[in-house]
Length: 410
Image (cartoon, rainbow, N blue to C red):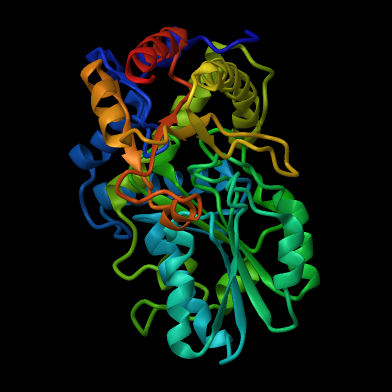
């Protein structure tokens, strides 16, 4: 098949039967029955401590390891280059603290004005230890990052640049390899948040050549978990944050006090089950690895989502008074199917209330990108209305959404 079979896709997601149009996917997607089944399987059969020699513990260990290995393959990493944890926010915070002993007072870290706060606040906290935080600002009209502005911020004292692969509000995708080359040329590390990118485009950390990459699995049809990737030598060198007896080469535990959530790690196997089911159903070209099969499925996903987003964006652009945030292609040229907008003089909360009354699941606010929303002259309380499409949305969803927007907007 050359187009996504949305009827088959939607049948995998039980919550989609509730009659609502769910377009708050940028905040978190529904999970398919495969993830539910894998999590239930673990909890009903092997809810024990892993790493012992009795049967249920051995099976628990295998299921957890399988989930971790597949999530590494999701981004073309090796299993000992990732850490499974509860959230992107916590991963960034812990890694900032883990890297801190390598920095000296006066060293500089660059953060952006565009990022979700998860990849900003943790680095800014290092000012307490004498580090200098420099901000990469956005264009006040478009919300875009200007690549040449990074050149003026990089210096011999720059140690790390934290930036997003894709804005969760402006939907702008960044040319990570080009930016990483600039950062590495300055002798600094590149820390990339891919949370808003991974649901819509395939991730290959080796091709990106970033030093660290983090993203949330609950944005890609998985359980509420996050993946942190780091180049192997950097992870081994970083300071451990767990118990004193956890060795430095135990990457899975040294960065995560308390260890991973076992049942959700095992549930991650269901993500691979789901995408493999899409690969088989659409009779895509065979591939020998999960990552390769995933890339083929994403080709269908990208085309489908771009078509829906294009239809929706054309409608909004034709509505007088509607201001769409961002959506100005960067050097990468791609845009995520996330459209944020506001109407000057109108309450975003009131618009969302009217949409909710039409059984449209959607929200408003700054979506934890408070610095970006403020830079655009908006308040956190009102913020923007954000439409986050996922590949399980279909033409009928968009038609219902447009009809509801037509009634709610001037």
